[in-house]
Length: 415
Image (cartoon, rainbow, N blue to C red):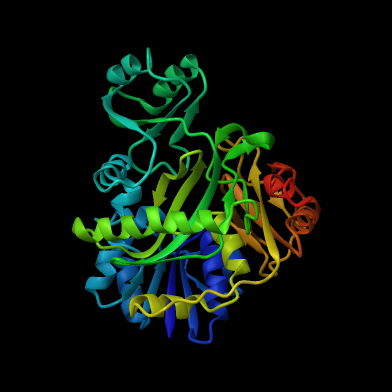
């Protein structure tokens, strides 16, 4: 069969790589893709991921059977609905179901209605109301901009002054919705769950992302500076509770509310003293979690998608090795940064996934904030970390930076 991947980042790079390995797939297309994906997909950078009509026409003209949508924006804007109406199968939810990521208030309300454990919250609809709220709210507090913000719409305010500054940041004008949440203490982890209506099958291995820009979880929130799997210090019991208390109930809730979900639902969870709670839902694979999880997945991703469609049992098969992924980002990210910086010293070997590079003549130059993720594998997390950093250190990184502590939380427990 022919498969089309929508998106041009590292998550889409690994999706194209994994689908290209499937014996079920004859050809992989990527829109818009990136230059580093050309050895695993036919890249069509002339079509933007926002050009929904062009994408539909391309899929029809090239006899695409399945489209796998990587990023959140095309999903929340209804690309999946348009493709399905044209007779193309889509791994990814329709516009209404994608609200689970596209609207923080929608997600909080549905969790509240169905008793799905999450942080207590308050919604505000204006800057003046938000400034009034932070005058005497409990501190620390988490502020989340309603709508999509490319992983940068969440601010954790540890002081009241920081909370006021966060309001100024999230409100460029008077009106707009922001969700205030109680600050939860605990270990964060990510669970990818294949969902078809009320049928939900979580991955039976989890990943841990590193959202803050700098070592020691310092600095601003980013789209993700690295990830690893498995997470040995979070037990199987926790995963079972996450499935029973979050994954299965949210799938059934979406179905009952008239928003049936098809695709992968990302559960961003935190293990508190009271048990697992939801931090956020995403309507697609996480990035960079996808890169480490799909590297560790030995079984056929396309077969799993077909089994999900037919509600057949899904049996994931995983490598024994641990996987660590380190993201190299442009200096200044997630704020302003320079583009066009030359990057060399890496191989497109199936363990290097590109997010923000483009080709200029024979060179790769930076074109985004998060630039390239390198993978290390090993018998232990510490060995995988060592192998990942050997690759990171070998990249000509003028203009780039990266954290040095990806996976350290797990390594503390290895001894």
